[in-house]
Every structure is written in C-alpha cells, then in structure tokens.
Amino acid sequence: MKLTKLVGTLLVVLLTSTPALAVTFAPPPPATPHLKGYPQWGALWWQWILQTPAPINPALDTTGANCAVNQPVPGVFLLAGSLDGSLVNRTCTVPVGTAFLMPLINVSAFAQQTDPPEQRTEAFQRSVAACVESPLPNPLSIQVDGQPLQNTLALLEKSIVFSVNLPNNNVFGVPPQLLSPSVDEGWYAFVEPLPPGTHTLRVNASTVACGGGFTENVTYTLNVQGTVGTPVSCSGNQQITLNGADIQTNGVAVTVSGNCNVTIRNSMLWGGTAGIVIHDQGHIIVDSSTV
Image (cartoon, rainbow, N blue to C red; front, side):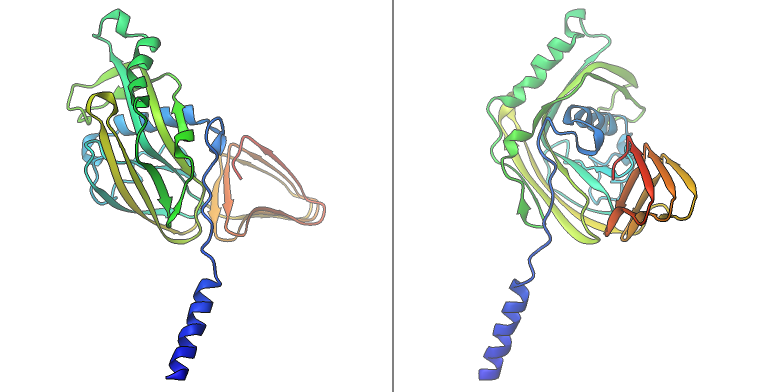
C-alpha cells in the first residue's frame, strides 16, 4: 500500500512538472501578422469563402476534408465556422509551420451590381456591417489546447474594401456575379505556428446583433505534421537567392556558414528549431518574407 501511494505521488510530480507548450496568439489590431493587417486578412477570408464553390466549400464541410481547399497564402490556414450557426467538428492535417486565422464573429456587406446607386458605395456597406457592434457579442472566446486568448473584444477589425467574384455553384445559390464594393467587420484571432502533433482549437461565440444574431460553436482537431519544401544549407563562397520559397521543417529551414551570402525575398521560412541559423561569416538579407 505504501509503495502504491509513493508511485502515485511520483507520477503526479512528473506530470505537473512539465508545463504545456505555450500557444502564441498574434497581437490584436493594428498588428500585421505574417505581413498583413487584420483588415487585409478579413477581406481575404471572405474572398476565400465566397469564391469557393459550395460542393468543396470549407464553411459547409462537416468533417474537415476540404479545409485545405483554395488556401490563398502559403504558411497560413484560414479556418471557417459555419454559415448557419450549426455545431462544427472538423479534423485537418496541416504542414508544420502553419499559422491559423479564425473568425470568432464576422459579417460581410456587399453590393450587387443591380442594387440602387446609393447602395453601391463603401459608406453604405460599412453602415450595414456596423450592426455587428451593437450589442457586443457575449460570449466571445477561442482556446487552443485549453489555453484561452484574453481580451478578445480587442480583436475587432474593419476590412479594406474588396470585391468578390461569385462562381458557379456558390454558397448563395445565385448566378455568378460580381459583388462590389464589399466590406467586412468582426473579430478574428491569429494563431502562430503550433509544434508538431495534435492540437485542439475551440471557438464559442454568440451575438444577438444584426437583426437576430448568430452563434459559432466550432472545434478543430489540427494534426500538425510533415515537412514543406527542402531545407537549404549554404557554405563556402556560395551566393543563393530564394524567391517565393516555402520551407517548413521540424529542424532548421536555412543554414548559412562560411562566407555564403543568401538573399530571401517573398518567402515563408519556419523551423521547429529555428527559421535561420548563421555560422561563421555568413551573410543573409531578408526582404518581404516571414521567418
């Protein structure tokens, strides 16, 4: 009996002495996670959802099988709730080094080209989308692996003006057409890359705004695995230029040693150990890239 108690005590000590890996959420607006402001991310999210045909649309997907469809930005996965407030449970496999953009509550307003001229203005569409602010949503929460993001109301963004080209078989079931001007307003969370393994992202949000309100009850199981691209190693007197590279690995994305010179442009680099490691006299220039 004493031995059993001792073993049990040791197990508790071991389990509690290893803290869970911290989840990193990007700061709220006006931050620019992965080189874009929240107003740009909000516009991209709606273009992604509305320009993807209904049969493969991630917002209508009940399993997560379509979560990778039409993703517009390398290194970032846009995630969706539901379009009708239904309970969502999806499982997605994503490359290591992937960040995530998840709306908590968001609305869009857009003009059809047959609308009256006075409605085909940015000001009018923003006045429609502003309904989401009154009353403020309650609750409004996101957790990743049980770790909540604090002060979620600070995440409110108002998108840039954008256009949407509705395709055939669109989510509205209407003929293909241009929606412009379009705007978005809402709360988005940006989750920085998670370590390899299985993670759980949960959103619980509801509002009675905008003439009746809506609810988001979303759970994603995110399986982070694999390697994207090929890690680069540069030594000696080499000169290497990476343009538009997407390298994501559990180790080091780019290793520079000797007198090697590396120029990186418009690229996404992520390493579980480090994005870039420089030895000796290596030189590196990073331009318009995410590391």
